[in-house]
Image 1 (cartoon, rainbow, N blue to C red):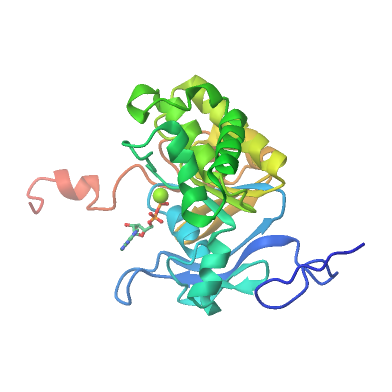
Image 2 (image 1 turned 120 degrees about the vertical axis):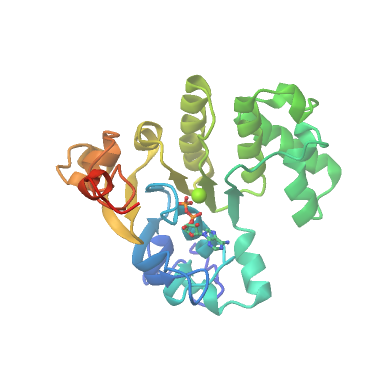
Length: 287
Ligand SMILES: Nc1ncnc2c1ncn2[C@@H]1O[C@H](COP(=O)(O)OP(=O)(O)O)[C@@H](O)[C@H]1O
Ligand SMILES: [Mg+2]
C-alpha cells in the first residue's frame, strides 16, 4: 500500500517527483536591513533527508541566519527557502506554524528554564503544542530522557546538573515532538571534551533513530567532521567550500586548509584591515 501524504503545497510526498531534500536554499540573498551589508549573497544549499549536514564558518559569517531563514523567522531578499518543496516565504501564519512543528531547534546559548525541573523542561513543548493526556506526556518525556541517558535525572533542577547534562536535556527537549528536521546552533559550545564527544554521538544517533534530518551549525571542526555526512563552509556570504568531511580534510584549497587545520593566518587574515605596518611606523607617519 502506498500512503499519500499531502504536503503544504498540495503535492504528493510519496510520488516520484519529490525532491530528496527536506530543506533547500536556492540563490538566496539576505540582509538584515536595506542599508546593511548583505549577510548572504547567492547562497544555495541542500539538506537531503536522513543526513546530518553541517554549516560551518567563522563568527558572524551567517550560520545562525541560515537557521533563521529555514525557520521562517527572517525572509530572503531574493531566492527561495523550501521545506518539503514548499516555499517558506509564501506561507501564511498557519502554514508556517505547521512547518515549525516539524522542526526541533536547539538555539545558540539556548538555556533550560531554570525554574522548571528536567522533566518539565522536556515536557514543555508537548504541553505547549499537543493535547496529550498527562500520562502519555510522562511516557514520552521519560523515553526522550532515556534516549539521552538522563531518565534518572528527571526530578533534578537545572542548577543541580552539569553543563554537559544540561545540553543533553536541551537535546531531549528539541526532539520532544519527534521533529522531521533537527537544527542545532553551536551544540558543542562551552562543553568539556568528554561531554563534547558524547553530545556529538548523541546528535548522530538521535538523527538515525528518529529517521530525521539534522542541520548542525558549528565551528568545531573535529566533532562536526566526526558525525556529519556533508559540510558547507560559508565565507563572505557565499559557499567557500563544500563536501564530505574526508574530502575536505584532504583538500588543498587554502581557505579549507586554514579552517580545517586551525591556521591563524591565511585567506581569512590575522590582521584586521588597516594601514600597513610601514605607514604606521614610518618616521613622520600620520597618527
Ligand atoms: N538581528 C540582527 N540584526 C542585524 N544584524 C544582525 C542580526 N543578527 C545578526 N546580525 C549580523 O549578521 C551577520 C551574521 O550573523 P549570524 O548569522 O549570527 O552569524 P554566525 O551565526 O555565523 O556567527 C553578523 O554580521 C551579525 O552581526
Ligand atoms: Mg551564530
